[in-house]
Length: 98
Image (cartoon, rainbow, N blue to C red; front, side, top):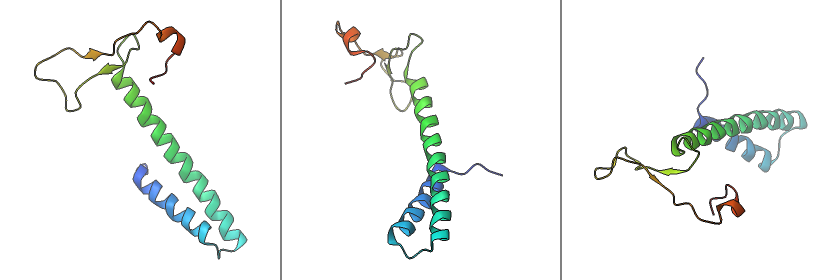
């Protein structure tokens, strides 16, 4: 059985939310929809967390510094990735980007 896709789960979740917001459901049906919505929301959250982790792994160098790389692959004029400059107040800010 194929793993559900994020987009399909999100669409189903939107339909569940809409059904719950419009009302008219019996208590049993509302509880079933709510339970379904919670399961879908958790799967969506898990998929987003996995995507975020993958992005972080792809954009950090071995030292944990964020590395700027061209979206489409290699940059024609520069083969080396460009690291963000380190500032003197990095220690005060921790790992914050902004």
